Length: 215
Image 1 (tube, rainbow, N blue to C red):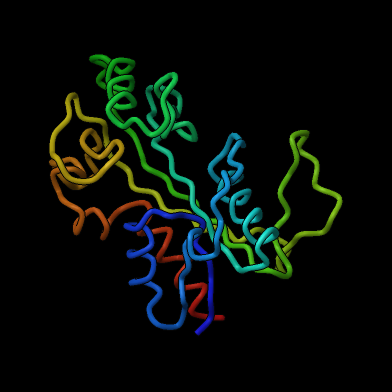
Image 2: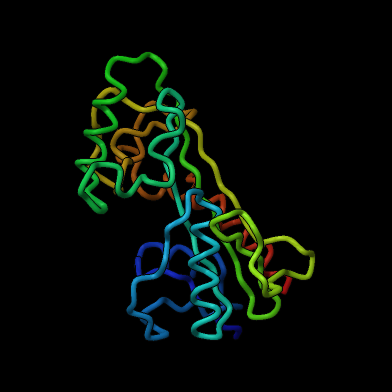
């Protein structure tokens, strides 16, 4: 069985990934490989953050690794909170209530509630691996590319709109205020089974799984 690391300790994410990938892969968490340090995540796009995390683990622990980054993008707020979704409210870190209240406050009674959740998964195999641009937009001096000379990135998007108030108790993050297209209830009302079948993360994971099954 091939071992691969998912750069997370979120048990829900791990269970979901393990179920989708099946018995061909032994999916390890950061705890499983003894990684307890803070992983860098300081770029301005989901793609770069996911790739930065995956590269860090692959290079420091000599393992195949994939990492994800997710953002909520609201049209009327020019794509906010986007890459800053987990720390949207000032002085907080993963404070879902504060993040939602700030978002609802900034939207106010704006009739344009269109939004989307977007997840990007970056996969880094030990050799060769993708190139990560530096702060000036130039490539690092060492060659870190995949065979096809492109990063292995898998994207999942679910479109919807922001509700005027929180509804539902399941899920996490912005789930109580996000209503996916084709439904009249928020992710938090629909429940995890439905959410996991249509969500941004599920769609990105499905693409990753399709690729890994070919290895």
